[in-house]
Length: 398
Ligand code: 7TS
Picture 1: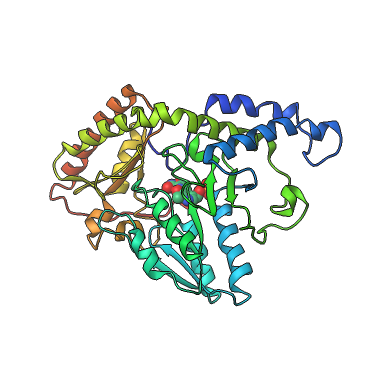
Picture 2: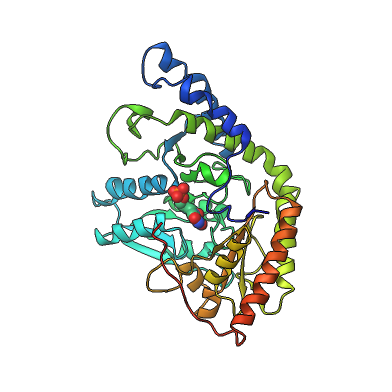
């Protein structure tokens, strides 16, 4: 049996999404910006897709949703746009973020720092969550932007976006959230949560890869990252991947409408809890950051004495795909900031394994995964019977 439990990395395309995309390769293939009927033929489904995106995050009609290549591009567009529009002209000079953002935020912030921008990286608490009050504490007159993820990709921890949105609106500071791991897992409402910019990637919610979105609230327009043609009113140049845009729209519609069944009615969280509880029955295992306040599909578990990479290798041999808590994301074997956020326990950092589920997982798959995981732990603890940790991380190059 094969069991895919790495849905925070990417997801299978929903078959309905795939069906909706198919006509746009060989039948309706015009350039949407062409004036002839081949171009115009793409419009109805593109408009439908855009409407699904607006509905999915409750954007107001007058707001923008730019179609981008992925959340990485969306994040870059916001951070570099703010830099150009608010910081380079001397109006502001400071950005606030957290220590546990995805590299699409942190690496961009590091680049901006190299250009003279002041960036504050707020730490998270022992549960891996940012305290909204710390945002309020660090906002200054010079602060141009606060950027905080909606949900963490490693732990699934949900951040206090509503409170942060209110603080930022009250203090007159622009607020961006990277909602890549939140769409389709928890309700996302840009108006209620007072969000100015929001990033997402279709492939995290059963859409195709290579397409994403950036919500921009009316009045918060930014200098584009990509200049060129007049596509999207010149706000993001380049011919849109029509098939993928249609797919993303449908993926959003299906993810948000099935959320009630898949997540709130606990299909996914029940499976996650079943898996998690079975692993927690093994000695010396803990959920990193604890069980509270998480996306319903994610668990990050430390299995003492079992190095994450060895565990993944063993699981992979038996058809189960999971991931480490990115503990080995760097060549120097340093644990990543998400793990460091939980303290200096390097054992914890190097023994984290992330299991992330989706609405396509079944009870049978989880039963099988439990068996495979239990056997792997017994086997690997047998090899290092002293539970001694021996790092063997290496970069895959991907
Ligand atoms: N932001 C967050 C919060 C993410 O989790 C990811 C991908 C990205 C941005 C980047 O998405 P992309 O579509 O632009 O590549 N996160 C992960 C992960 O946790 N494991 O693999 C990719």
